Length: 419
Ligand code: PLP
Image 1 (tube, rainbow, N blue to C red):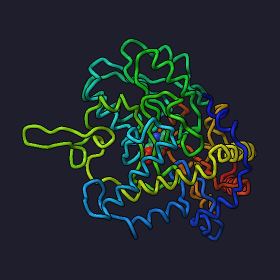
Image 2: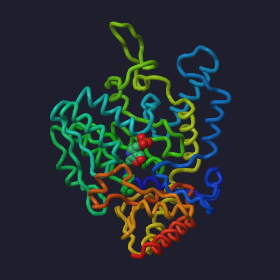
Image 3: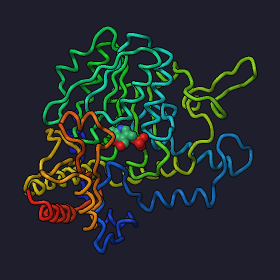
Image 4: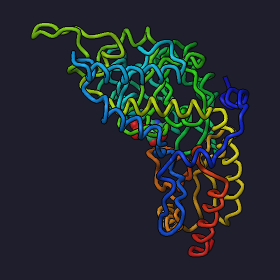
């Protein structure tokens, strides 16, 4: 599957960005006397009214703890919580809702795989393959496992455009490769990785595959069954849903063989001091009280995106990316970091003679919110020989006029710091 092909193929309707903007109350405000231009979506996206209402409704009408109560409210809360799981399963085209594990976010999803599958099945000398463009969330858990178990971490290099070197990837796969864990879309560069091919090659080598889909799901339709990986991780808050909830999708037969990641209430079948038995997935991996209203909010977010049509959203964002790439190219001394041919709507850049933090602070005076820093991807910064970048990341509610506003604010930066 090439993502662009899938997402554009069924792009029938025209996307009405002004109508979509009206769904996001926060966008109406002014920052520093200017209309807010929110371009920090890769860090966290804003929330539509539908999500806010769904969460408020839970607390006003349905809230109680889930799974454990015999009383009516608890049963109602359980129904809406499990309905959210069903919605996410449909959104990802999972084989069943039992393949959807609610976690705190992509970070916890990856830690879950490292802590469960990694601890149980990986031994000293076994290899885990990641890439040079990973977020720290997909580096550090494997380093912790390396310290604990003596596994070997292999890193696929990227080229000067920020494209994964597939030949090097193939060469890294070998008889000791047990797991490949790679981002679907790079948060720092915007690169879209050829995940279907990555999965095929990994499986040919007999390895499990985890795809970190955090930055893909807000932009592209994702079909986990078609993709064929073993795990797919995402965070709700980047998908227009609330914080504190996320998803680990795992193939049913793989999850079934995995031991618990954390112990506590809700994940057990029976407990005695001599022996405890565990529930089946997904509950085996959901120790303690989950993020109930947040899961419902995530369910509403996927309803919202499904209603808009991710193919239409993608086409809109692709146009924004093309326009932003052209306009930012007009700013003297500005260099875009990450120029892969397949990119999501994320533009990282540096400007001669200006620290990215200064860029971020100055454009904020113009109401423009961008990110400045290493984006939790320090190895990527090292690869490009920079300490940090400024990053504009786009969402479904951004407009061409907002790209112009960013460009004008950057022109003001350039005036203060001539090239
Ligand atoms: N992976 C990628 C590619 C990300 O962009 C992020 C967040 O920026 C994460 C993982 C971690 O997500 P969270 O902090 O929501 O767990």
